[in-house]
Image (cartoon, rainbow over all chains, first blue to last red):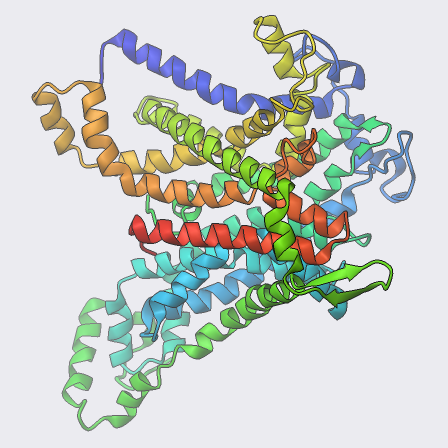
Length: 291
Length: 324
């Protein structure tokens, strides 16, 4: 499909242009975080030549009031101090990822290696939980959590995020375990090693790359999740996506602060996604397509 | 750790020693019941228990609770739930707004799927090359996938702002839009405004999956097609598409599920408005429960959404013979 030099040039230009279009909103959003209000609302929109300004970040991270006066209400009605919410996001994403990966690793090893009656149906059931709309879990969960006192708690959100990521983790990890030849297990079994020993000493080390990729994806999906946090928290804490939506106040939207928080939320996700490039498509397709 | 054969388990990867060690137990297998028992007692349940427990508590129990809730309704005067039988369900099927929401959801899902598959395939074909820098471009495309959808919604809320938004500004200067510049508060265009955010965020999803599929295609059929003088269009429709159907089916399934349950974008960008122009089923169910305190009705709506998705997706998986 390689044509003449001019065709090749055209293709390269087109590719850069198209990808540039997709990158543009992210770049634009980051500039909003650094712009003074005057430049955010300027027409025509300013892309490069604006006054760099860190005040949005200072408000969001509490730098301008010494990190601690989180309850200060700023003009405009909103409180923009978001460091506690970033911390809540990190805690929830890390702990729910840990829970998901531990549970899913055990289960997917069994699904990959052992003979289980109705295994096909079970895998299908796991896949079906991926199809359930979050709203159909969030509504009953609200009432269940309310009666168990889990509403507005870290535990509640961590558990529900773990459930949300479970189908992805189980199916993806199963595909990684399936890639490891079963002859290795069988040889060790014949040698008298127990399942637990084989799992710990042989299969787990070999699947480490896949487990890391799964963990990264679970972290990202918990980090970006919106509906469960919106529904199942009240006043104790919010994760970043939900916290950002509170910047829309009655007197107008604090675009600069929102963009600053949004930018801060994107950076860790960007770093993580670049780490799993090699396994990304496999992750996005729940382990059914290998790169 | 030393196991019975005398082989240190850390060296189990060592082929020579493993083979040598594997011979002896095999020969002595009939009179080695202890070893056999290990095989037999090799039960999967301890491994699966934590997963089953989580799925039972956080998927099955809420599901049944939801079903129970859909037969109840909250009575504001008595401040408690009461059994109302099938009332919520009969209300739902007679509710014009529910049918509107279903229509919006179906339109949203269908239009976004078509646009994202076509655009995704076009960009994937464009990027399927080893030109210098294309790896970087593929990397940049993945970035849109990890922006929290709620933040994406706000990005586009700003960019589609009638007064100082980037997109109306560009459209106006190109003469494609009237002076008003209204997108998200126009009943005609609001849904398209939301779909733009969705398409921006998820077209790269299609691109990456299709690219992986294209890269895995065998070279020979394409070479012989070129020798036979097939043009690019024929090669694409007769070779690429049929060989890619499984990849496309998987992408459509996963994206279709997520599109049908869209919540974040509409909640952040339009809250369903103007009027009912952008109410999706998920948003309608959520609002009935939490804004209008119709707990049972919201539950019925969310179950209806669930049934549609799970049934359609399962049929799709069977028909397309996808395997996991």
